[in-house]
Length: 152
Image 1 (tube, rainbow, N blue to C red):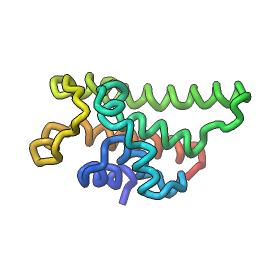
Image 2 (cartoon, rainbow, N blue to C red):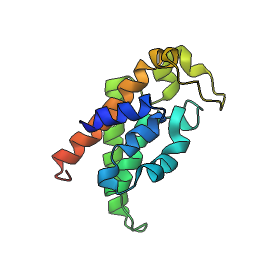
Image 3 (cartoon, one colour):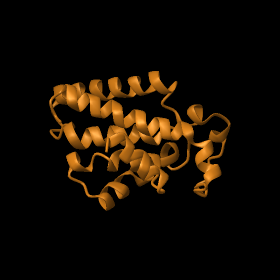
Image 4 (cartoon, rainbow, N blue to C red):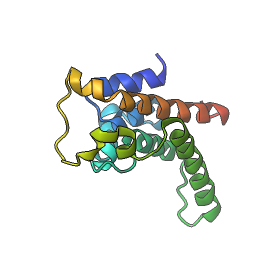
């Protein structure tokens, strides 16, 4: 099964958008499902339903950092290179999805910032087709980057 389909299936089983993307890279990050879900749990709904940066996009960034981020906090070149890569990934995400901001992607559905997540019903999922698209896109963008750079 393609990683993007794994991510979509996780979302359809109840994971938030960020958890779905990040957990789908567990075979590369080394994080198990439980740890992946915990690390990405704050970012669903555009940072805990604040409708800021799309959770799927944040899951992609979190996975990218876990896979090839820098760890020498004084290495300015590594930091610059990493930021440039992340900016490139996020810009590609925005080109495909029209934005990387949750409220803009969701439109009218993105007005609610209550911390209470929506019930996962068929009606919920019918209104979240854009979320499924974003999850798929984020996963495919990072997958492609990893392939192009010989990481997978």
